[in-house]
Image (cartoon, rainbow, N blue to C red; front, top):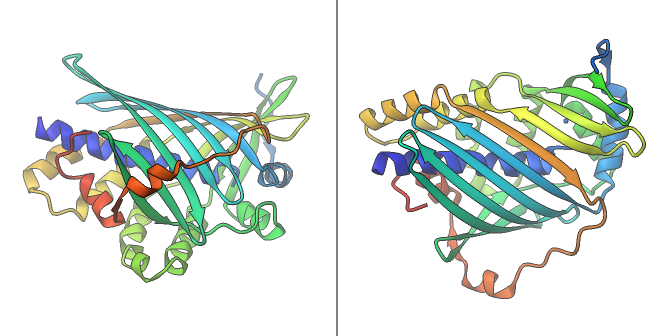
Amino acid sequence: MNFIKKSMSIVLFVVMISMTSFTSTVFAAGVVAEVDATPYMKTVYEKMLALENYHADIAIQIQTSLMNVTVNNSSDIEVNPMRYKNDLQFMMMDTAHRSVKNNIEQYMEQVDNQLISYTEMDGKWVKQTLPYINKKSGSTTEVVDCMKLIKKAVVSGETDTEKIITVTMDNKVLKEMTMDILIQSGKEYKDYVTFAENIFNSLGEISYVLNVDKNTNTVTHLTIDLSDTTQKSVLAILSQSTIPDKEKAQLKSLFGSAKVTMDCVYSNFNQVNPVEIPQEVKENAVEQTVEQTASQAIVPSTI
C-alpha cells in the first residue's frame, strides 16, 4: 500500500507540474503538404498574449504497469496578472480494478515574481510558492521570447475552419529561460537550479499539436504526448532522491514505461468571470515549501 501511495504521489507531482507549465506557456502549440508555420505563429502569439482571460478544460491520461490515472481539470484563467481557479477530478485504478477518486480545488495567483498556489487537500488548504516571471502581456518582448521557444512549426493539417500546427520546442531555449526565472526569482530558488538543470539535460525534444481558428487566430485545442518527458523527468527526480534503492528500482521500473497524454480545449476568450480567491482560504492555508512539495512526491501520502 505504501508503494502505491508513493507512486500515486509522484503521478500527482508530475501532473501538477505539467498543468502549471503548459497552462501558463501554452501560447508560447484532411492532411496537407507540410508548410512552415513559424511566421504564422507570431500572429497567433500576438493574439493569444493580448487576451485578458480564457477558460481551459484539460484532460490528462497516465498509464503505467501498476495503475491508470485520469485527471480532468476545469480552469478559469486571468492573464495579467496571472490568476487561476482550478477544479480537478482525479481517479486512479490499479490492475485489480480497485479505484481511488479525489476532487481537488486550487487557486493560483501571480504576486510580483512569484506564483502562489492554494490547494485543498484532505479538507486542508496548503499554500505553495513557485518562481514566476511574466512580462507585460502582449508586449513585443514577450512575443519575441515565445518565438524563440519554437524550433520548428509546420502546418500538418487543415479543415474549413482550422489550421492544425505541429510545434517543436527548442529545449535549449526552454532550459535557459527556466534557469533565468529560477535565478531572478530570489535566493531561495537558486538552490534548485542544479536540480532543474539535471532534469532538462535528460529531456529530448518536446512537440505538441495546436488547432488554430482561421478567423480569429486563437488556439482552440492542444494535444501533447508527455510520455518521454515524464519518464525522463521522473527518472531524473529519483536519481537525486534518498529513498531506499529497492523502492527506487521499483519506481524506475514503473515510470520508465509510463504513457502520459494531455488534451486541452480553450474557450470563453475574454468572457471569464473575475477569479476571486476567498479570504478564508488565504488565512487558513498552511505554508509548504517547494522542497517539501518535492519530498512528498517520494514519501507516503494520504492523497
